[in-house]
Image (cartoon, rainbow, N blue to C red; front, side, top):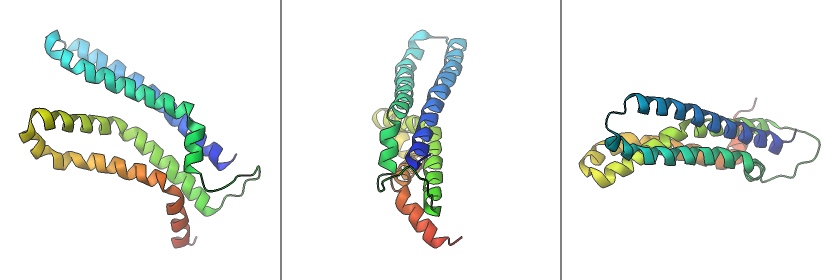
Amino acid sequence: MKKTEIIQLTFIVLGILIIVRTILATGDQLSMMIKYWENPSSSFEWVIPFVIVFLVLLSMGYILIRNSRQFANRVIMDEEETGKIVLQKSDIFQISLVILCLYFIVTLFPAFISTAFYLLVNFFNDFALFKEIWQQQIWTLLLYIFLFISLLYSRKFSIWLEKKLVV
């Protein structure tokens, strides 16, 4: 397998993981909503964000699966691959880093959406509460941004890591 094929397969597996976890989490959320649904008018305000997050997560999984080749080519963009595999240490580091970054990006995506939504709602509705919580919540957003940047610069980081770790 070529490096781009390995990365493409990783994107496909992560897309499937997002879709399956979204469906499972949605089932749990719906059962909790039905169980504790006392006043339908007060619970309706949570239905729209719930549906939006559900659709965003399903769309993200579908996009990862559908565009996995383009994403893989974007991550591994600096080299032409031949049919022969010759993997350097930096290539192994890059593949590992990409897989880890993608795993954590997918795993932390619900927390990222939840934190962003929570901050936005409090920014517009309860600014006093926003001023109290933004410092605690901003770390989730910064971690997510760091993972995304690490994914984009995985090649440069893996080359640097190979030079530093002469194994």
